[in-house]
Length: 198
Image (cartoon, rainbow, N blue to C red; front, side, top):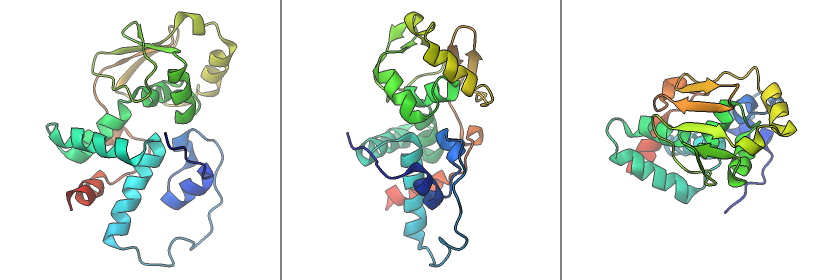
């Protein structure tokens, strides 16, 4: 698996997203006019939108392309379906539940078998949850000081409306799939569809 070693704040600045989206409380210093010197082509704008989603969810090109193909075959708009596919990844759901500080943390915690889906331990970060699935922290991990500390640090984080969270049980139920309106960042998913349609 490819690992991105580029500084997160630098990448956030380039892609025009807030570090808060990545679970980082720092603000990146903006250099006025740094990105506005050159006129960006239509292809460049489309590519940047794709890079933004790949960076936020920590997926590689092959995996992203595969998700786009799945989204294209689903009913409805391909761009909205792509967002739903990315948000329904287990590592993303764990991050949204407030049981991990960042998506990278969430990926590692899932790999270490700290979470269950409908009572079954799952160690695949890209596992796609469905409507009605219950994601919970394993019994043995609930008494861990690490998770209690993480829950305290993420107490102010807003849990999306498509998740029905139960803080006492360290669990959440997926009530529906995510839509672009539920996101805490802006993305023009239709540009990604246009890019792949060429």
